[in-house]
Structure formats: structure tokens, C-alpha cells
Image (tube, rainbow, N blue to C red; front, side):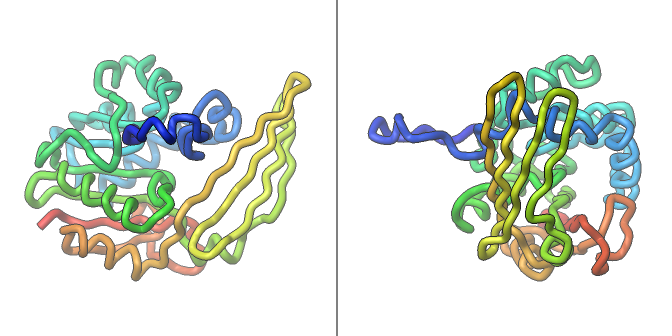
Length: 253
């Protein structure tokens, strides 16, 4: 996604957190997300969503392309969009998805009824400050779908986050010391990360809107999706108290 242009009066303002956080240190912070896990997740999700080879699929906020590559191996005609130039560059190193990614604004995607399905994985929604902006983003995604097209959003399960949130963690990864503090502030989960490496300290922040299941179902319906169902994992397991994922699936009217 690409942030809309701002007026000159705002040109000196710091970019929003989601511009700063998905850059040079992303792979260090999320190194546990590997190709093997992406392959398992895609295999399960294709069954849960009823996707099959030959479908044209859009990966919204595709990152470094792990799931794109797995869907391509499964025979899907895939395309990915993301905001981060660094992650898109990583994705473009993959032979399976080279030429199939682009930088785009999630709130104004340049597609209209072009895809059989779309996915949005690993809590890549709810980044914007207002509910109106987040709703606009979902409207934009839905517009990319053909009539009857499928959409799946993988988001954090709010109830599980509230019960299991670790206020502070310190991890050593090679030469880097990573200290993270987390809190829930209203409807958002906020994370501040300090990375100490090579004698320098780098600060990153995240702020993501959390949704109750009924809120997400209502949002899907309000943006033109029907037959909405919510599961607790890529494999379609029930959304119970122990599920850390909340995967909402709908079909464009």
C-alpha cells in the first residue's frame, strides 16, 4: 500500500509507523516466518477457502512474498501489493513471483473486479488511525474481486491477545538485543521495539486496531461481503478461546 500524497504543509511530518516499521529490520524481528510455514498455511487456507489451481489471487500486503510463492507453486495466478520497497525488493528476488508485485495504496487499489480471490495475512489490517480509513481499505479490497470472489483476512484474535499479551520481552538475536513493550490502549494493541545493534539503538512502533469477531463480521457485511464465517486457524479450526488467529472469510455479493 502507498500512502496518499499530503499537502506541502505536512511534508516535514514523520511518516506513519507502518512506513517506518516494515523496512531494514523486519527480517530480524520476524525471522521465524519462513517459507516452510508459509507453504503449510497456504495449503491449509486453500482448502478452508475452497481455492484451487487456476484462480487469480491478490495478496494484499504481501510483504516479502512467502505466501505468493507458495500460492504460485499451488497453481494459482497470483499478484501481490505492499507498501514497503524493501519487502517488495525481497519478494522480487523470488523467481516464482518476479514481475508479480507492485507498490500500491491499500485504500485505492488499481483493480476493479479483477480477481477470483484475495487474501490479507498476518494482521496486515487496522493500521490506520480512524475506523473510516480502515473501512475504506476494506472497501478497496472488495472492489478488486469479481462477483462471487472470495476474501480471507487473517487477523489477531482479540480475546487471545488480551489474555496472553506479554508487557515486556527481551531477546538476543545474534549481535542484536531486542526489547519490546506491549500494551492495549482502547481498541488498539501498541508495541514499541528497541533494537540495539553495532553500538546504535533503533526505535520502532506499531499500533493496530483490534476487532471482536462480531465487529469483523459486521465490517465484512457492510463492505459487500456475504456468507461470512470466522475460523481460528488456516486449517479451518473453530474460533475458540485458545485460538490466536481470527480468519474471516466472505464472498463478494
